[in-house]
Each structure stands twice: as C-alpha cells, then as structure tokens.
Image 1 (cartoon, rainbow, N blue to C red):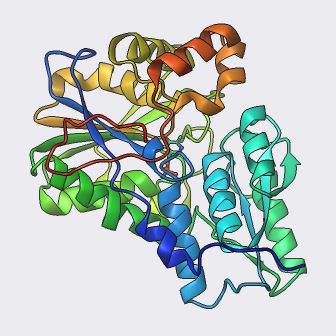
Image 2 (cartoon, rainbow, N blue to C red):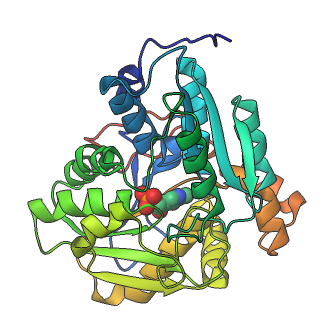
Length: 346
Ligand SMILES: Cc1ncc(COP(=O)(O)O)c(C=O)c1O
C-alpha cells in the first residue's frame, strides 16, 4: 500500500528542526546564571526530533531508506518513536515501533495517531542494550534479519547521525546563544547522543567546560533516561564517554520534586527528565561557574498518567497546570541575538 507524503525528503525536515530557545531561569536558582534549552519547541515536541530527522535523512542519502519500499523500524521508549513516526507520516513511510508496555498511555496514543504499528514488550522504560537483556531490540533485530531489504532501522544506539545532530546543531546553538560564556552543560543519558554531541562540540571550543550527566536511580520511572549501573552502555555513548566529567545520580522523588518547583517558580511544565537534570544541578551548583546550560528534553504533555501515578499532580491539577503554564508549544520564535526571549506560543 502506498502512503501519502507531504514532504519531498528528510533533508527538508532537518532544516525545520533545532534552533530552540535558550531561556534564563531567573527565579529557581537566583545566585547563578542558569539557562534552559527548551527542546520541546522542536517539531514533534522533544529533543529527539534532532536525531530522528538526521537518521532518516542519512538513511535516504545512503539509499537504505526508499519511498514506497522500506518500512522504518525502531526499538524506542518514547520520544524517538514520537519523532520518527511524526516525520515518517509526513514523508509517507510505514513505521513499526518495538516499545516497552510500561510507557505512558499518552505516548502510545500519539504513536498510534501518527500511524505507527506498536510491538509491545515487557522491557524497562529505557531499553537495555546488553546482550540478551532487551526484548524490544531483539524483536526489531529479528524482524530485520527475517525480512532482508524490507526494513530500515535508524538504530539510535549505534548511529553516529544521532551524535552528529547534536554536534552540528545543539552544541553550536548553545555556544552561540551564550556568546561562548557557557561554563557547564547538564543533560540526561538515553543513547548518549545528546551528551556526547554537545559535549564534544563544547570541549573543542573550550576544554574547561564541565559536561555533567544526570543519572536516574536504579529501577527508575524517568522516561528516556538510563541508569548506567543497571544497563549496559550504548555503543554511541562508549565511543565518546571521555567528554563526561561527572555523573550525578538522582532519585525519582528528587526529580519529581524539581518538576513541581519549576512550575511554581518559572511556570514551565516539563517532563520527568527535566526534573532529573534540575536535581543534578542542585547537587553540583556550588562547584559550577559561568553560564550553566540545562537540557529540557520534553514538556509535561505526555505524562498525565505518570505524574498522577507518582503523586506529583492529580489529573485535575495536571490539566490546570498545563493550561496555566501555557508552554505546550511545538513552534517557537527565537532569535539567537536575544537568548532571554521566552518560548512564544504561536
Ligand atoms: C526526554 C529525554 N529523552 C532522552 C534524553 C536523552 O537523550 P540521548 O538519547 O541523546 O542520550 C533526554 C535528555 O535529557 C531527554 O530529556
């Protein structure tokens, strides 16, 4: 069956991704200059728009992804699937996603609305990459092996296009928007694409910039992030691990508490990984200098059931905060000349 497309190739999509706002957090940590890179302003609503668009683009350029022939397949715990299915729909590709059944219902609904076929597994929230430990990865690999030529897997855990999307995009954007005055960068690790891409770029500019990983506790509930003690390191991360200066472990409670503080002080309503990044900042702020940049990977929109399950906000409170925070933006206007500019809802 032929699927309709409204974009001619993935290169067009890459051009519309990134250049997200860098917003000064004025109230939460008054004593230091803290900035948030608001990645939910990307098309499809998260940081994963960057690797997803780059991996599709390079797949097309290398001839591995062909219109009306190839189906995209990927093991993913959420945002990569949302981004890939969002772009696959615009490009007219069929897509199958191997996902952990624990992922939030809202995320599953978005994936289905984007036309993805879901292959559910009993995995952890962030697929483990060690041999024999992960069903989603094994399932996707088996399908590819048994149907040669039919599938293209972007393979975010291995694909250097994931790294390149941050090395050529997120990193330079942060350098430019801070006028090179960035002293530290804090983000979580899923595949390691963000931390190694941004970290490598920034350290090439200034090797003294501190690159810090926020790591959720073992058996955590922070969608998209990984605890490196309970899960093997993805190949992509292993290739450039040396750019990470420090790894700060944070609990689910610390992360969720920071989500509430962020809403009440800055009126930004973020997803769980942002809470982990803020909790890691809390533990390191005393030793950091210069402009400190935090990666805010996605907003709260997909996490009503998770926040209600863990007592962060009741469903009623959640709806209220979502409207009040007004930050459910998927398109933003932003000028690199004015990094204090808030994300504007179009
Ligand atoms: C929601 C979310 N998912 C995933 C990641 C990790 O991304 P990566 O796969 O590049 O390590 C982050 C980074 O903070 C994030 O916020």
